Length: 167
Image (cartoon, rainbow, N blue to C red; front, side, top):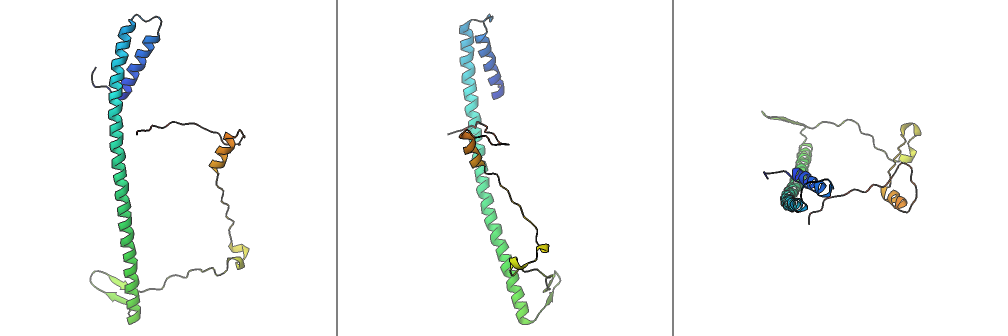
């Protein structure tokens, strides 16, 4: 057989199985059995190669995840250093009484921020300045336990999926 995809091999395998179980089949059982055996070998080999490829992709994804974590850590370090240097520069400019420094590349100035509201006592704030906050979260673990115990939960049901495991 030419180079077939895993999907094509699976289809051929199912066709051979159908032919084997078809009472009107004109093929001898031995021929179908040999075909199934050959297809199973090809199917298994192709599946092993796909699993190897999956492992390779998982390893690459994990390496990217580690690189992302390292880059995020480095980014955070740089952002913290920028904030510290801004504070350092601002503090020294204020200490020396400077509010502006100009150079050919940029201008550094100290400006007042817009007013910010500070809440000193949230309970004392009048109701007209408060917004109600409703926060609901569905407890899927409790629902699963209730459904498994035989209880009926409106708007929820159990579903059983399957996953591929490569060990």
